Amino acid sequence: MRNVSHDIEIPRRRLIDAACECIQRHGFAGASEVMICEYAGFSRGGLHYHFKRGKIDLLIALAEELYRRAWRRALDNAGQDARTTLLTALDEAIATQAMGVGDEQRVLVELWLGARSSEKMSATLGAAIENLRRNYWENLRQLATQWDPTIAHYGYLFRTLLRGITVERAAGEGDQAEHLAMLKTLRDWIARELEVRPPVADTPT
Image (cartoon, rainbow, N blue to C red; front, top):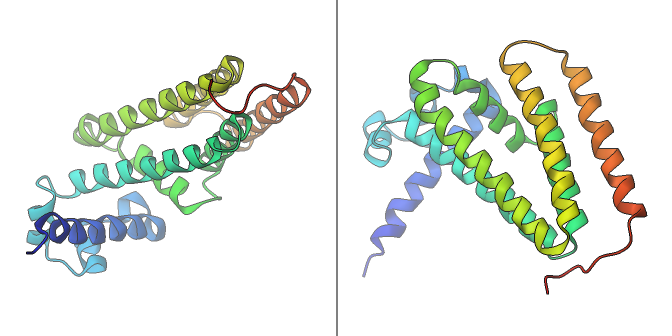
């Protein structure tokens, strides 16, 4: 018997992977529906068959996949200790701002910025990405709290700074080098604070 859900998932995966590759190579603006279809070997009709609103729904699915991968990495690190979980998340956030380390982080930045290119994009893709981002950080906070509430507080402090920087970047204000320096300074301070604090249990009780 054919696995219908599997048959549907394969082309959806090809389209998501193609969208990711297009954005990596050509940026958000350059990744048109036509180009994505060419990369995936699909017609535009095939794209709309699997993603009813076309590019918007496809990019939402791409953002969901990238955040799922980030969450899986967080869970993998959580198997070691809560400090690693937090510091890895902070490093990924800094890489996202730098847009120079990690293809997936660059794609998320492109999606975030591209979602603000029009009112339609902001109301659909932008709202979806903001919800994914908020859920990711909240889940990460809860994960860290299982081990040590103070670690979660450090994460909240970093996220507050990151949010302010994100708003400045969206408004075309501030200097990227200065933003990165602030994030790295706070990350290094948190790392030092975690080193001098008394050890805590590495697994939930």
